Structures are given as C-alpha cells and as structure tokens.
Image (tube, rainbow, N blue to C red; front, side, top):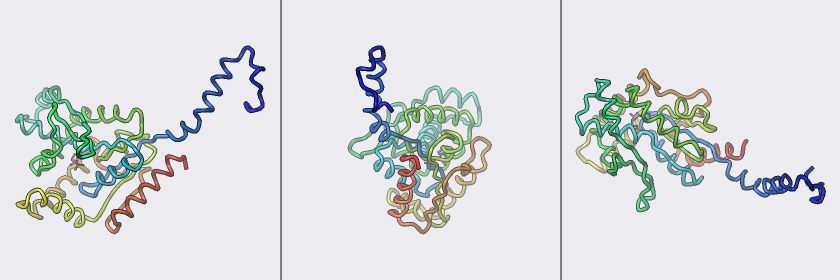
Length: 259
Ligand code: DC
C-alpha cells in the first residue's frame, strides 16, 4: 500500500514517510540477519564440538564450547585444592574465577582463558576429565556457568554445545540438535584423540572415563543430560563426517529461512 502513496501527500507525516522508507530499505538486510540460536547437546565424545565448529564457520556464527567452562572450573579446583564437597569452599573459589573465550587467530578458534591464562589444552587432560562431571553436578557451579552462557546468547547468531543447552540454557532456541553414537564408536574416537597427545593412555581407561561421565551427567540432580522434547536426534554412528555436516547445515538453513 505504501507504494501507491505520493511523497507530497505527507505534509505532516514527512518524518513518518522517511521512517517507512528507511525500514523498507533495510528489509532485505533484516531478513539476511535473521540470526538464530542453535544448541547441540548429547553424550560425551560423539563429535558435538566438531560439528558445532563447522556449522559456526559455515553460517558465520559464534561457537561456544560450554564444556570448556566446566573443565576450566575443575582445573581451578584441582590446582587450588578446593574441597568441592563444601558449599563455602565452592562459593569462595567461584568468586576468584574469571572465564573468557579469547579468539586465537593462529588456530582460528576461540580458546578458554582462566583468570587470564590460556588453558584450552590443559583442560583436555584425563586428570581434568576424571573430575569434571563431579564438579559440573554442583548446583552453584552450574548457576555460575549458565548465567554467563545465557549472556553470550543475547544477540543470537550463536551455536553452543553441551549437555543442558537446549533444556536449560536456551530452552527457546530455534534449532536443537541432540547427538548420539554407539558407545564403542565414541570410545574409539576419544581414544584416538587422547592417544595422539599421550601414547600412555589405554583404551580401558578411556572407556571407563566415558561411561562414568555419561552416567554422572545423565543422573545428576541439577540439569541432567536429556534430550529436549523439541530436539532433533542426530545419530552419527553410521554417518560420514560430511553427511553429518550436510544434514545439520540443512536443518540450520531451514530454520534461518523460517521454514
Ligand atoms: O563437552 P565436554 O566433554 O567437554 O564436557 C565436559 C564435562 O562438562 C562433561 O562431563 C559434562 C559437563 N558439562 C555439563 O555438565 N554441561 C554442559 N553444558 C557442558 C558440559
């Protein structure tokens, strides 16, 4: 209708007319910038972070590895001998923790910094992996991490992976993916990853750690790992890397274009 109105008819409404014209000019851009929130939850070592990173790069979205936050908190607790069975000790420790994702242009990725130190690699050690599920089950730790995660999603255009992202952190997310794969496949993948860094690691050790983490993560009282009712299951046991990525990208593009 606006197309049939002549500018000279807007003697009193010049400002309104200009505003409408301005909005019309921006419509295509607004459509293009229709950013959404994508959550990827699932069991340990089923490739959540690999997929999330690839999707973020393809869509020019921000990728956030929420597990890195729980790992960094665990590292702080271990280094500082925090007795996490005591609420006061946890409370005091959290007051001294500052977490930040800092982009590393050399590695083309955001890396976890704990109180200004880059801990991206040390938080992947088995020593941290052995305790992280215990620490991540503490209500105050989750409150601390979730508040920061929710702030990161304010302007959308974000992909976050974890265990409770679609259920607790962003229950309103436009696209929720729940990833899974057979246990044996996950153990083998994780083993290969750790073995490359430390040839002393055994398959048995990796298997035990994975099973224990999955058990604790899905049985804890606060925000246990579970599939959100509206999440789409992506089982990658028999999918190639490329097939998995293409499936997820298609889902994301459909949501972004409003289908
Ligand atoms: O994704 P990851 O393996 O790096 O996660 C490490 C641990 O952190 C995992 O055992 C469970 C916990 N975690 C969590 O409880 N909630 C999240 N949103 C992400 C991770």
